[in-house]
Amino acid sequence: MSQYSVADMMVVAIARRLKNNEKVFHGVASPVPMVATMLAKNSYAPKLVYLNIAGGVNTKPKKLEKSTDGPELIEGCASMFTLTDIFDLSARGELDVAFLSGVQIDVKGRLNVSAIGDFNKPKVRLPGGAGSAVLVPTVKKAFIWRTKHNKRTFVEKCDFVTTQGNIEYIFTPLCIFKKDEEGLKLDRIFKNSSLEEIIENTGFEIRYDEIVYEEEPTKEEMDLLDKIDPEKIREIEF
Image (cartoon, rainbow, N blue to C red):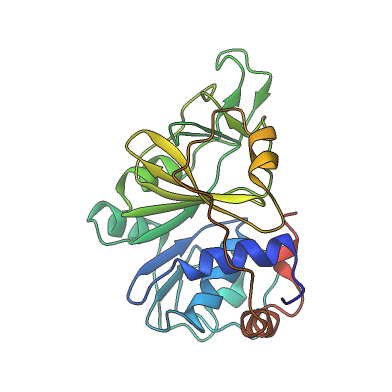
């Protein structure tokens, strides 16, 4: 067993689920998806097409920075595009994976990044949906990540539904949920956690077919991860 952090586990788990020839996009404030996509591109899925909000296609940055919208993310790229192009690509059914997140995520797999409480008089006004309202319904697979797993985040019903649609997986520090016709179902548990901890920290009933643990990161995966991200940018979301 290799030594690894929660961030390492999330990044590796995400990367394992990206496939060759998929067009994969991440936006701003996305260190975990950024590093995960680069890990997949350099190991499991070398033919993956990596797209980022900075406009780079298959970029090869010399060094990762904290921003996921910086100029280094167009270094060595094969070509460039605009964010409008990404929305068009998704609307045409040609974007395979988009990474998004939510402040509230409910049992049906709906996301809230708009407001906590009554929308007209909210307790907290959130930043809003930005591209998520377009991408989640149109992308083939939305991969959702959230670096906090508690009852404030995972709720029975969102206070406001900013977007819903083609969610495939939700990755947290404790586990992986997969969305089916009924809503979210527990898919994998990380070995740093347990079913009891997940139940205790989730605001809805946990459905599952069987208890399955995600394999821990291997030494090879950790060595490559540290080569790609030696400054551990992946840790800054935690």
